[in-house]
Image 1: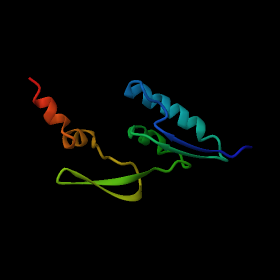
Image 2 (image 1 turned 30 degrees about the horizontal axis):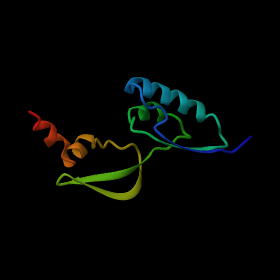
Image 3 (image 1 turned 180 degrees about the horizontal axis):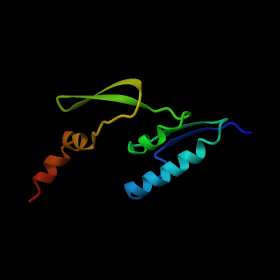
Image 4 (image 1 turned 45 degrees about the vertical axis):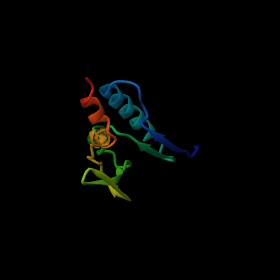
Length: 105
């Protein structure tokens, strides 16, 4: 009968993507049984969203990111749904990592 507020960023790390998705799904499906609590979970595993959309007590939110001329623009507006942003390579490129690696002799 306790009320919990749990905040988590990527429940499972340091494993394969497939294992991370399976473990995260299992944990989330267990936590949603606790009706008196609020769980706010952040993850980059957008693939698990499709499986979890069937649960009425799960809502999906994301922060929108726009890319203009290779620059990331954050509007800090919470949106409904699951983000489809894939920004890792853009960040590597913007920070010069791609050029640095291309110039290794």
